[in-house]
Length: 86
Image (cartoon, rainbow, N blue to C red; front, top):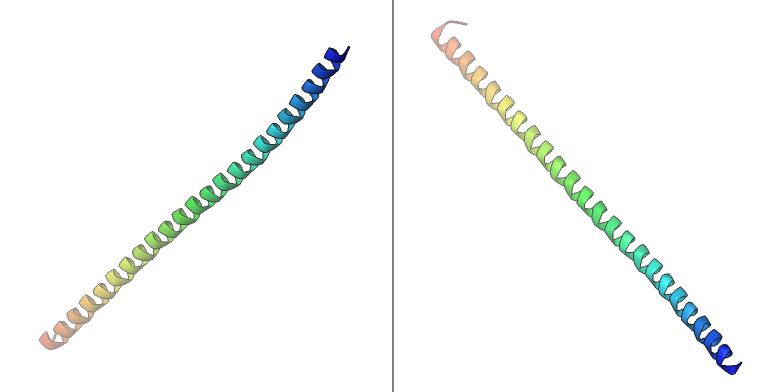
């Protein structure tokens, strides 16, 4: 009889340890999910910044091309005025 009680006591302490282990695993999983979510958000933010930089560079290139074209037109007009071709 005493032997059966010690087994029951041993089982209950083991199951409580397993329960706490499961809780620790759940907390650890939650922490890892939060960390991986933060990492994913950082990657998305980085991608957005790179994309915006690319768009800024494209816009700057278009503006420069337009400026060069305006300068060429101005030079052509001046040349036409000088040569009398208006």
